[in-house]
Amino acid sequence: MTQYVIIGDGISGSSAAETLREKDPDAQITVITDEGEPLYNRILIKEHAKGKLPEAPISIHDEGWYEERDIDLSLNTHVTSVDTDAKVVHTHDSGDLEYDKLLVATGGTPTQLPVDNSDADGIHHFWTFEDARGIREHAEQSDTGVIVGAGLLGIDFAAVCGAQGIEANYLMRGDRWWRYALSADGAEIMHEGMRDVGVEPVFDSGVDHFETGDDGHVTAAVDPNGDRYECDFAGVAIGLSFNTEFLRGAGLEEDNGIIVDEFMQTNVDDVYAAGDLTRFHDVLLGEQAQNGSWGSAKEQGRIAAVNMAADDEAEQFEWVSSYSITHFDFPFLSFGHPTLGDEYAERKYSDTEWRRIAFKDGKVVGGVLIGDLSPQTALKQLMREQRVVADQKEVLLEKSVDLDELAPTQEQ
Ligand SMILES: Cc1cc2nc3c(=O)[nH]c(=O)nc-3n(C[C@H](O)[C@H](O)[C@H](O)COP(=O)(O)OP(=O)(O)OC[C@H]3O[C@@H](n4cnc5c(N)ncnc54)[C@H](O)[C@@H]3O)c2cc1C
Image (spheres, protein in one colour):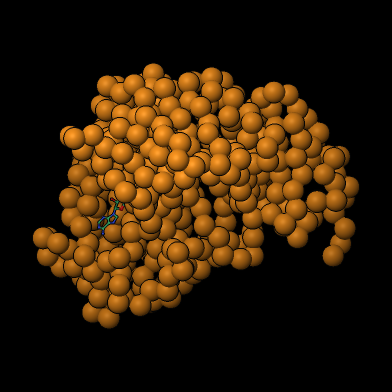
């Protein structure tokens, strides 16, 4: 009987456990998580923090789900190290666990700003349901806010402030939000969305240090220009540090993430990794890539499990990820790898509608759609087909994308 151990009960670990049980009905499967609750929907915790959604619908699995599948679930259990020679996982107070095959699915932890008082009361990071509960409770009592981190997670803090009636300043480096993926035209639509909910974007800014009151609670953020922004609530979302410290000495190759191939296998025999923390071989891109999105993590967990249960490499990970934002009056969607292009095409269609497509070696590798998401199906299809289309930008920038208008693919 094969013994599988999965570290992490986020969507990648949980989806792997489910798939392993389907593929290997007799196996022993253990899922270890240092959180106190089984899998919940991490995408929805922002709606809870906004005050818009109660707790119940956010939960995905209760403990009965694991019992029904005969999966051992260890809650509140922190893995401290892994011995990949002896094939043993060590935990802080639940003893050791032997494995035949191991999946590392431990995701990341938000990075703290390396500035004075960055751990003061009232300064929040956002990753777990517990974080969301704390953010909601504090946001309901706050009047003024500061947000740092001009990316996909930072904007959730802006939405929380907007929904909770906090007047906030969003301090950004550079001249726009998510400057690696958006041009000034696209970003301006997002800035207007922020202003509409009472959040003011502040450019060429950031945080030099936080100020605190006698009680240790944050009172202001001071930016590198010396400008002071009063706040009793602060949200910091400047990136993730991957949870791999327990792998020290285990021999796994890492490079800002765990390196895996397209089968989610690491360089160490019988050790796989899945989810946010992988740097995987992207078969569509033809090089290593990283995804930080729910759908991708779920699929990586499934693929890892299929390959763990098979005797050989059974299925490869091939996926176009997407990440949408629904906080404003207009929808927003980023797909694929919008920052990895060597060439771009973009167009603004109205005050709330904009499109940008990223190409690499002439092929679509990602993009951002604001206002009208309907071209996503065609653009993702092109990405999957790896068709060379960068010479036909006009067709791809038409309001409605019709792939039949593309010139036939040339034999290469
Ligand atoms: C606020 C927020 C909003 C988001 N919105 C979106 C969105 O709109 N769309 C989208 O696609 N994605 C979104 N994401 C990203 C998405 O949630 C992640 O990509 C996805 O959840 C990653 O899943 P994972 O299984 O790789 O890791 P995680 O969900 O991080 O799970 C890893 C688990 O491992 C546990 N763990 C870590 N170290 C150890 C250890 N040593 N021992 C035991 N357990 C350990 C962690 O506590 C955690 O429970 C959002 C994320 C957040 C935080």
